[in-house]
Length: 310
Length: 266
Image 1: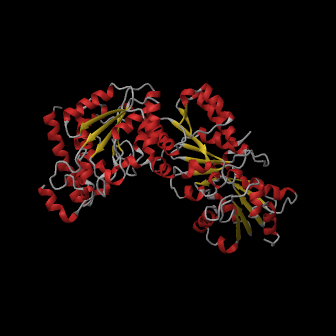
Image 2: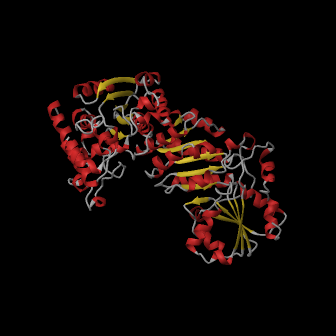
Image 3: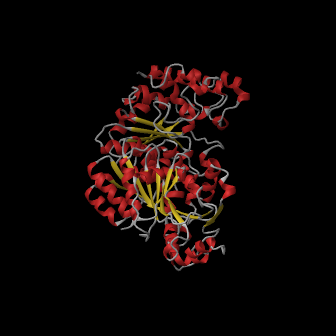
């Protein structure tokens, strides 16, 4: 099941018992949404293609006591309504959850208007906004349960992949969810890869026939920054960060800034590097993997880094 | 409260606002003064729940979407007990930051129902309030005051479409049409007229009144309560109304510290 369907099913189950849950869709569907629309029509609102209004509407509903989820396509529900997210949600500390589907190059053949490869750089700049990048459906399920059971004091932006990404089974425990990251593999005490979202699948591919080549961490809560992650990083000599974002939107800068804040000497002790999509828009057709290959955003490149050939 | 008392209240509000701006040496006096009667009527003259300092779940809501004019409600909020006595007098003094009031309204101020300042958000937020009240079976109204320049923001029209479609007849927008933006008349910038027909075409009940006349305001708000559609009250006003120096002078959108003495004589 896709990440979005997993999350929507969880929300639906909760909404069946809680009439204060309201789900707003910016003209965006999902198989799991069909039952929501059919069985809870008063709790589902089709807002139309109006991201800005969706967020302002969510703000008003939240201030009136509703528990609001806004659902839209990643490139649009991020940047088209950035001002509204900042002003109507973050500045008013409203616990609205935004589900953003199709991050990275998920809509590969739709062209650059449909990519969310620059959204993190913009979203990250909004204070008082938590951001998650989900890497697989197991994780989506755990995060959904965790968030639905908590009382929040700020908006949360959840970035979901369009595909049902194939990664190893992953079941987050409470400690992982509070930490904001999870150790996937720790069979190498020198080399570490930190991946988020789709990138985790690439990293796991690299490990498939090279188990033990590097340890692997999935960093899923981008903000609020998981400070314990720095404590994990300090165990290694070489750290590679991989992010399906353009060069200036990548979270690598955030990671280094936080390391500098929490343990600056690590910046001298550890060799850091990153793999991102570089600085271009993709106009070619050929699918996501093909687009990745044009900028060497590949599992091979990960291996080359640790072999000293990157 | 009768019209004479409302006139008196309006004078008191204008006096208090100017005192605050003089002390702070900043503000948007022209924009505030054009909507004094509207605010006075909503709180003192109209049958709303705004005149009691209860939680927003128990009363009507008011959003000053033209956030640079939120000042207009501060003397009212103090008078009605939403904020502590003395809050207005503290504004602009060295103890300013110890008090609740800020140049633009935010929800940390009791009685302010949305943080505004960036234009174009108020109707969307207001429709959220109105929709929630409908879903919960509550009879409250939500009032949103917008400026005409704000109508250039696309988000206004997204919200207008939504509100009409969902029959949010408990939502009332008051357009403070003082015909002046920072750089002058709206019709010289990008033509807004015919404003009434635009709102009607979006499915709204539209009323056009003199925004400084309490009889007009009374009639309009009474009619809005009986509408099956959301209502837009086009309140034709004068920017800077009540001060001869400021009236229809677009430069008084902002505060001019070198012209205070002249202003106080107006």
